[in-house]
Length: 446
Ligand SMILES: [Zn+2]
Image (cartoon, rainbow, N blue to C red; front, side, top):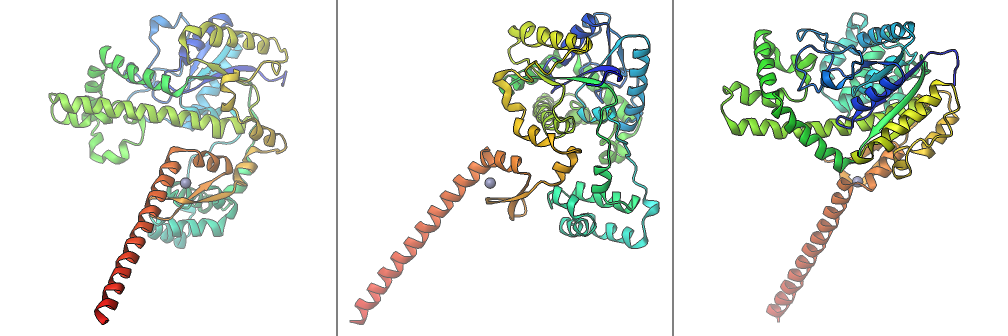
């Protein structure tokens, strides 16, 4: 605990867990103001598709970095870092409590002292380097070989087929002349503020139902018109002229637009195309929620060594006031008064598996959590194949253990046993026929 640092509260968790509700409840109790950290809600308009909390449910609490960016503009972590920290200081200067809320978890890097540099400058590359990338951009094994030469420690962290990341690491080296692992290890992972984290969590089955019904509700509330409005802008700004590139940035990435392009392109009359869009949107929303949780577990928690992070169980909405509101308020009150909050359980008993306490224990002994991430071992699964037909390689012991107990591996095992049985049966059949044939031949010889 650092008494000289200013205090902030961060609320994270996947979509549809009730982050906005608890943030407004806490802001109301503790004289807070909300800073949005959702990369889609920063945009003007498209309130429904981007899931902005309705004005009438905000209880008069100011929401910053929300609903301000024109649809033509793109936004990034670097900009968020600047604007979010400006807002935090401004809110503190008015003696109020900043509460950062949102689902774009990687934006939370803005709260660390580490330097965020998104730019890769190809001007520094030698002609050999330029040529190498040009020739091997889509050749995973060549790229991996190169990274292994440049920075074996970093190469060890990535899967050989993770082309995008491996390429990125090489580009960092070419641009800066520094090994990516050195850059990462020199990052300052201390937090700028005395920060209290609340992770609002809901069980997957319940969450998936909520996500589905949230999508349905969006369309009851006018999402169809919003999608059509976005399409009008999409045409106006000629986004389709470089579709693949343009869809990677800005509002166009929002879940609930691209999925409807076939319906929009065909004149908005084909009911079947519309329903298909909705189905894909639901699937993508679920996938996104999964990714959000993965980021909390694999990136944020190790980076903060699990400190000042508390899980709020929002699975049963009937228990909201006990499990979420009162628990959060009690911890927040003690945090703000400067009391020891380590006495509170980090998670309810039922969800203790979400925090890997043995991994957190390991983290206590390293000065920089990145060290542990870089020293992960690789495991080869003898049963599973990757998409190139090679044995599956898995990075990190925990991920490997998870894989062994997972569906994909078990299905793979099932398939392998079935196949082995079949192979044995085939051999048996062959032997049998051979035997019969030999017997027959022998008979003939007689
Ligand atoms: Zn496997």
